[in-house]
Image 1 (cartoon, rainbow, N blue to C red):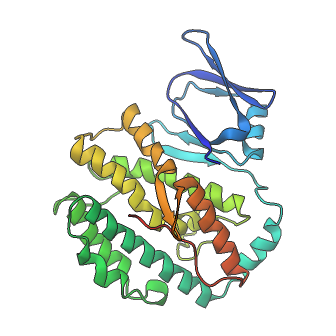
Image 2 (cartoon, rainbow, N blue to C red):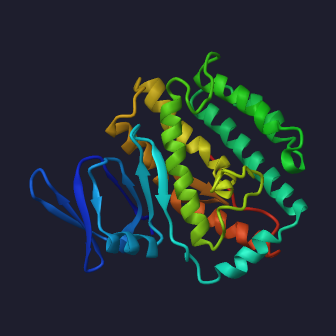
Image 3 (cartoon, one colour):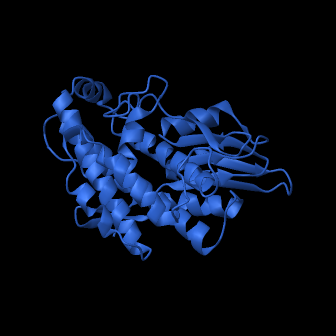
Length: 295
């Protein structure tokens, strides 16, 4: 089932009643309700939004990813449940005890899928995607010769022009990419918790200051789905600022069609398939991750 994504950009009061999220709008005294069980993501993008503690507890108990934005209107923190899966203790143990060779093979698969999807996106927007083929065809275990980094340099300059530099603080469309990736990262973290995995233990990302390194690993092949939306907003619509409409467009990446092993699923469902397959790999039940294909 596709879960709803709710974004609040104006002052509202949010509370809980009869398992419903109650939205009270101050400007016109209207009240709207949404079933908690139908919600997957809540984005709080206004400092005047008020939330009750019972509502916050109900959201976390239902594995809703509640995302808070900072003064720059960028996602800066989120709430997730500590008990997202009935067998998570067992999954934690397999995850923490995973062999180094297993993680190297997982990273190889992730990078192959990422570069393939970057290549596919370039073709979708009428550019030469075949130039990335030598890179995804020759990824080594653990990506020991950094095919990802070399391919990314080619990818960005082909997608947005030779002067574009990908950066967290760079000029547009970096701001659009940053917002989209933050939403994607929250969605991946939610899927990991739902599968009984610890986002804090990564496959490749291991920065001691990073609370969600596993989310950063798993989101890699999914990044081009954000890139596609940003490309059309920036290059076709000439949007370079984070207004409400472009944020809504970026949130739609969670429902983008994703091909997974010959079937097509919405991205938020595909994420759960990927994280469930990661559990099976850690348990030794399978050797390969279920990863997205961009077509």
